[in-house]
Image (cartoon, rainbow, N blue to C red; front, side, top):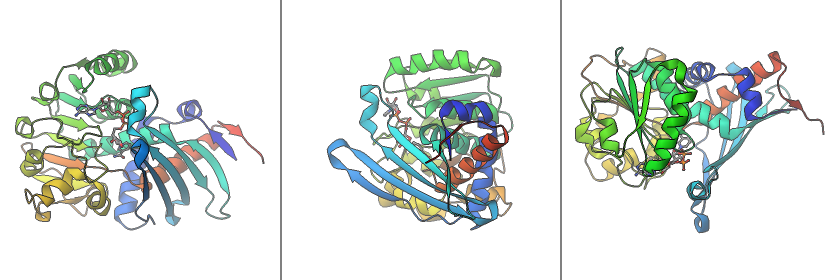
Length: 329
Ligand SMILES: NC(=O)c1ccc[n+]([C@@H]2O[C@H](COP(=O)([O-])OP(=O)(O)OC[C@H]3O[C@@H](n4cnc5c(N)ncnc54)[C@H](O)[C@@H]3O)[C@@H](O)[C@H]2O)c1
């Protein structure tokens, strides 16, 4: 069995590779080629944590995995990751577990890649400014995916904790220098989103993090952080104003994401506003953007198909490039 750490994965696999893998994952999922039960979720009330277990199988891709993911949002206040995960990659012929992959890094990759695919498929071809709200553990791959998918002159980032946003902007300016994009921290989310062509929010907020009336026509917005019914980072006004609304999985979003469930419950929107799954845009079943003035909203809660195809494509690259530690029991 191969043990694949973050540095092993980085040695053989890029975020660009992952964007391709997640595009395949969304298409396979939306054409019913992936067996994915809704994930099980148990709450740890004492520590505001959740335990999630996500199995998946895609016979046509020869891929099978189980991801164990624990989300403890208070961890960031102790300088620890809010997410702790591992992915078991499974041989589809024998059922043998052939690799354990660093699930924290895999999650960052595939979550960033989901926004990358959405931006690639749904954003205007010419975009100039990006905005990123939330500069925690998931933010780095969100930012890089934005820059892989569109050339941007500038990205403004913001966070409830302004000093964290400033540190993040400084670190990413150095790390992503080759994209030649100006990355700056601003004190408020409203400053960041004003005039932005692409907006990503990735926070566990229970209150909308920006003013939806300030989003400009033509913008593409990815809502990434809301994964429980009481979490709403995307303002209802934005969801109401959106010309098109896409999901990674409509069932998963409708069972978990307050971003959509709260405006539905308050009758601020109806399901007739929903356009459908991004995978159906990729397969050609649904239209994507049809004009540069449309506001397009993509809501992602993260689905096991992303983990599955990402884990399998990392495993294949690691075997091919002889990366990782062999562990025999
Ligand atoms: N869609 C997916 O596939 C997916 C995958 C992983 C994580 N997530 C979710 O994304 C969210 C962020 O994850 P993370 O690992 O980066 O968390 P994190 O705890 O590392 O960081 C969250 C950041 O959001 C900031 N924040 C909180 N409320 C805010 C507000 N109102 N305005 C601006 N900033 C605010 C915090 O200060 C922090 O910097 C979580 O809710 C997580 O569960 C989604």
